[in-house]
Image (cartoon, rainbow, N blue to C red):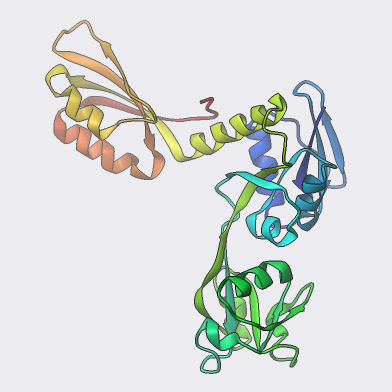
Length: 281
């Protein structure tokens, strides 16, 4: 049975559970459940601390899992990213008091506080900056106020917490992170891992696309299909009236209204948009 790790709490947990449920897997009903077996799908889910998941996957204790890209890279466990999952987006950046440190080279010989020491050390080495990295498990934003560090490196979402401490981000982002599906090396050929990946791809696709059906003058079908190319190719079907055809295609959800307007101006009619509950590619 495939062993798959899921965040047991934190910002990634609920969204990860929702995605697995949409993918057709059994999920826990009680937040206190740590192990959930899904024999129908040949998977056993282990609910673990998000920070530990990459370590368990990299060591082979579990076969695959869901965690943040930042946590994966900080762990340095050898686990590998398979695909992004489209939720839990965040930006990892340096921050300091405005006017004190304006760019990344100025970090040289300073103290940098972070909850992601390995990730920060790797980045500083890449940009050729030597600094003293101070590991903290939480409340990184107060490190400068308390005199523990001169700079912090942390996840920045709205920036509200930084501003409350009189800090501002500077330099290019260290990393743009989001939830990712990861696996241990050597599992590429395991059918169950590929099945999970394919199902997750289907959920991500369904969340970003809608199904669009419309009738179009046969003479304009090429122009219409150029507006709705779909993932591979739209389906075009004949109608009883030979002057018209029916078209079905997938359209990015964010572009739905614009595409509908363009199709209507082109001459298409009976435009129907349907949300996709799940998709198998």
